[in-house]
Length: 76
Image (cartoon, rainbow, N blue to C red; front, side, top):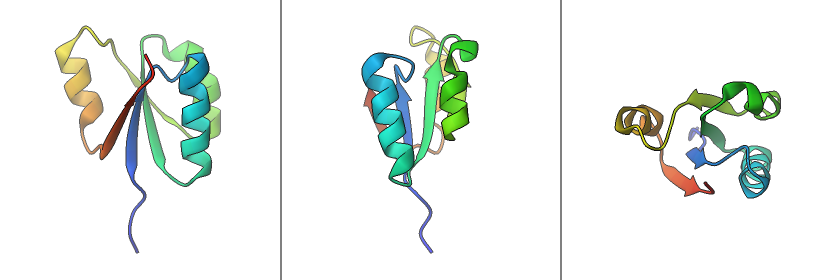
């Protein structure tokens, strides 16, 4: 059995990003969202999203968030 595609969403707490995250989760993808403030992303966790604390201005945060990811959606 093939494992689900691993998707990283940047900007998952925003208006567009949350819609993309919900649709991807509902479609069976494994979704990770890199967020600056994990507390503001609790609704994403409730939906089944993996939360990765990080900042787009920090190269190490980006590298960590990309581990094991098949596709990136930038809604930031």
